[in-house]
Length: 451
Image 1: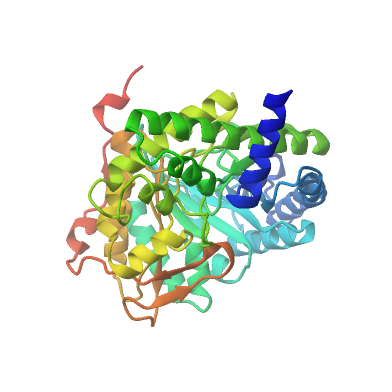
Image 2 (image 1 turned 90 degrees about the vertical axis):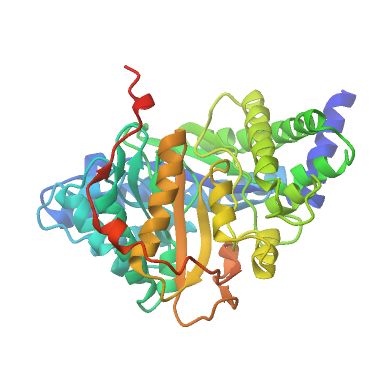
């Protein structure tokens, strides 16, 4: 009994002192049965299905939050990649699909909806191309719609034609009115996964059930407190401490996810173990890494510290829950992490160092403000580099960079809410134009052909 009481008190302390929360409860909904040759009918079916299945999502999450005393920060929906659903109609209006998603999300009260997406790692269909072309207008004419495009995988290689086009799309989105937030809602993936509950990259994979509820946990503050408790521990001991803390965080997430799924009458999906920071003090992955002995994130040793953290979080989480999925590791978004914001502002962390860290972290170059005049080919080069890291190492990588039009280098850009703020970071002044112009595909690595 004492053990149980101590566990309860420890969880209370994690919530009160370490900003432990459930970052998101995300309902994934299949729209495959909504496809129709009549585009308007297909959108109407999709709207009806989303609003019916997610009608009680927010209310249910709020009741669990009040009952358990655990903050649930975001309630979200992910849907089947729209390029797959809208492709049944030759006259599909993809911007109207985005507006339908926006309306449906607002009708049920969720914070974001993901799935304005296309999967083009092996090549793009006509529907994929039309969706990608619609992204700039779709994201700047809606409020809560998020978009993702998968341009590579370890099995297929890297679609460099799609990489080139996505560099152009990001630049075009940023230069439209409302483009700062529009670009922040767009992510380009390699090895994307269909059970990711985090935005902007969430979509409901075709391999998923009809409807599921998944959760994404947070907890950087919990991990930092655990590291602070053993200031002279060896790395072996430190890894054990982090594993135990991650176990508690994951168990909390699983309880919330199973309760939500049961009350909504749908399947429980997964717990995503990713440490998701915010711009608030005490909720930073960067500070957890610095607690290991780094004077500032970006110092030599940062990538090694992140490797230990990521591995220990995964091991601890897998001990706590058998249904683990999504991205599961540590996010290092610049604008959404108080320690990363400060390090970027001081010049302690650069885009190049961040790229090196993405070989270890959950995703990749995430929420980075870059100069507004950055050429589309340079953005495409960043995407290609990240995709190469993911494809060669069989992991998910991504790029979510935001060209800050009209903002000088070093100045801060405000995104608002959980998206935070970030200084405009410098990028290489040298051209990638001729490299990106080659087109075609970078082949998959040989070691992926294991049949």
